[in-house]
Length: 162
Ligand code: ZN
Image 1: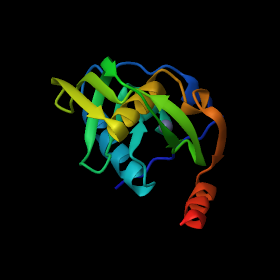
Image 2: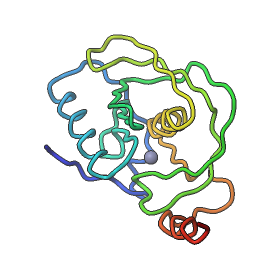
Image 3: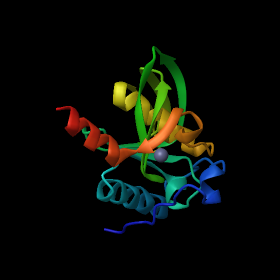
Image 4: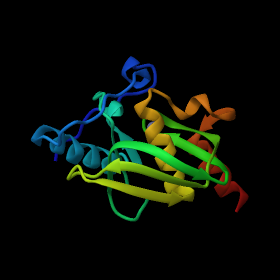
């Protein structure tokens, strides 16, 4: 298992536009495996290639239903709305409230470079929007309503309420 270094906010690579993946080379497959390992190690639900310094349109997500690999993803349909706390492995320890669609449908290629459609609601819809934003150089912090807050502080608050 090869972990990659997760780039954090302030690293210019996070604000750049990623290029499409034209071919699933051995190197590209290795990157997908490394991204999954890196995401699981960091307890994240999603990771986009620019977060490990590679400007390619590649995303991995696991919201607890198994790994999903999205190559060249494009949102083709959205509906509804959800507002909730969001975090990012590139903005460690922080969270902030973001409004996203409650349903998202994405067209992309899978690891075999076959065109597929992937849809999701709630956390999956949020993860799809968040990770695909990374591919155009955008972070969720641009969308936060109110202020960013410490993610661990919030957990303490929740415990205090119980
Ligand atoms: Zn992120």
